Length: 202
Image (tube, rainbow, N blue to C red; front, side, top):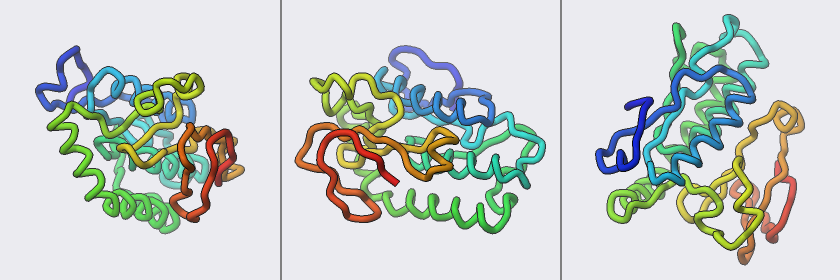
């Protein structure tokens, strides 16, 4: 695990992480874009300090921080290396109270639920130089809107991920999502079919 990288580093199998980031909504938003830029550079093993390395002193009791931490885990669930870390912190998830523990365990269980899919995708990384986390432009190269999106991505070739990365979207528990041209998109949790285009998804 390294915080430095160079062209061709993927041949070593080394994982990169984004360094000592702060715990803020802006940092979370920028981590999504940073992760996609690394994938676009052909580096498939990327990681971050979920929840931020530099955390507030009241991290264990602050509802505002807990909201951020839960959303960060939800994003991290669909990144190549799923890990939490914080400077001078006890980052075990039970330290944040029963409610947060339950929400984070839901995300942990989702990560495990996708293991067969994820392992199959990482075999393609090994065999074909693939990346599991994929900017929309990878799969929709002729879509001019997909070329501009830095906060949505595909996990493998079948799952579109649109993490909540702003406090405003967190408070309304929904966000605007762009669905590229395809036969249709099925909401993972509800089974609802969505046509291509812009929509708001809870």
